[in-house]
Image (tube, rainbow, N blue to C red):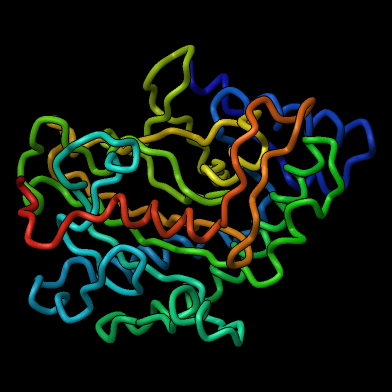
Length: 328
């Protein structure tokens, strides 16, 4: 089953363990990322009450009438509200599908680098909903923790490959990132799912590592492995779910696989189910040259890519064209 392919990694033990303990942890990480691209991480240091407080504040906004949310409308990659029908993540795999059954509030990196050409695309100011003023301090605290956690994860990943600990973090001095509050309402809001329609269609993430705080549900997260196909993702209330994205898989020469996943539609036996996920997408410094690690680490040598040219094309791929009906 998928759960057997997704180990629980205790970062507390990683930090304090001796050489043998750290070597065992690194080996488990390497094995899991070759098979599924997912980990469960405990000992992460995130205040356990913070995600639920963020959900409560976000729910206040998402449950507003559409007319009050529409002034905040943005397109994929923007900072603000992504309404119904804005995304179809399966497009990134080249698979046609109806749009995803979700709404999102999206944040992204906002501290300018001083390079106007970079800043105007990747480091614009964030927007905060006036109708949920308590969201800003809560999200700001959460984002501080996510940045530190992701750099620690990248150090663990470098160690798992037998590389210098800073092999990846030397490229995160001023990184881009994205943070989505994904709202998955029930069928009374989104209607009955169309054939092939999901809360989020099958895809892999685009960056280096993704950190997910999720709620379990019948219409929840599934992950894909070659051995087991689609299976419900394992859940631990004390853990954050971590997966690697396309840039990291490419960086490792496909030694590691980007974690393929989807979120099921509202279930027929619980049509009113409502979930909110907190999803932090970590990337790297703008215009990092991502070049595959050679053998014996890497297995496939990809042509080098500019990280943010790559990310731009991926974001464009999942954008549903303007004027397309959510039911098309």
